[in-house]
Amino acid sequence: MQTIHKYLDPVALSRIGGMELVARLVVEGFVTGLHKSPYQGFSVEFAEHRQYMPGDEIRYIDWKVYGKSDRFYVKKFEEETNLRAYILLDTSASMNYKHNDNNLTKFEYGCYLAATLTYLMLKQRDSVGLALFDTDITQYIPPRGAATHLRAIMNALENATPGEETELSSLFHELAKRIVRRGLVIVISDLLDEPSQVISALKHLRHQKHEVIVLHLLDHAEMTFPYKGSVIFRDMETGQTLSTQADSLKSAYLEKLNEFIQSYRRGCGASQIDYVQMDTTTPFDHALSAYLSRRK
Image (cartoon, rainbow, N blue to C red; front, side, top):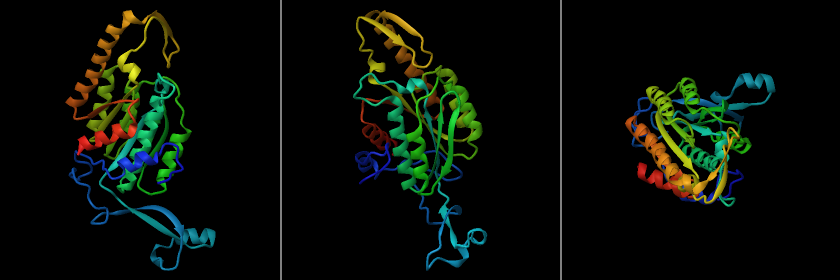
């Protein structure tokens, strides 16, 4: 398998390509747990044009386009599927962190996850969209199910770069207002914000009848605090620095980190939000396939 897209890894696709991401809750009237066939009883919606070829049905010729171009084009339609997915990817400055130069940054890891999930859902004939955000929503691509949509999302990921600081709660509230049609919302972020406020915003998405999955990305160093001796820490979003003895901070840091993670785990669990913590030193396809296997 070959791919020309930066964040589509052929090895990962061979590992995950046969798996499914199905919704668990009721989305737009469909009872989940099974992926319904896109060919039986589904309505269709216009997807794109392509040039007329011998054998195409004449009724699908777009005569308005013919009048403008003097060429025959037919309308292509796509089946309206039972799953509409929205991938929300955090591109704030903190996502650019990696402890080891041989590892992926949290941002790169998130891009690989977003690309693979997009490929997987389009392969299932589902619709998928993408939102990138830091201080604002920097790009929003509405869900589509057309095969050509893969390129649009891949281009957005490949052209994205980590930006500024973010306030997750306000961004999620804004996205909850923008995403009107119910579906599956997948959040990919390091969640470096006040957990209670972020959980409140995620509940807003649940209140809108979306199913929500949170993929919480942390570098292994953020989880283990391997630093020793005199260290200068720099906040990647504000630029502020702190000079300290790492040994004296480790115990308190790990305690605070555990509280931070448990706040998200409990808050998400109480709101039927699927919370998944991912160590970015674990190959992303291993982490994703393990999650999809558990989710069945």
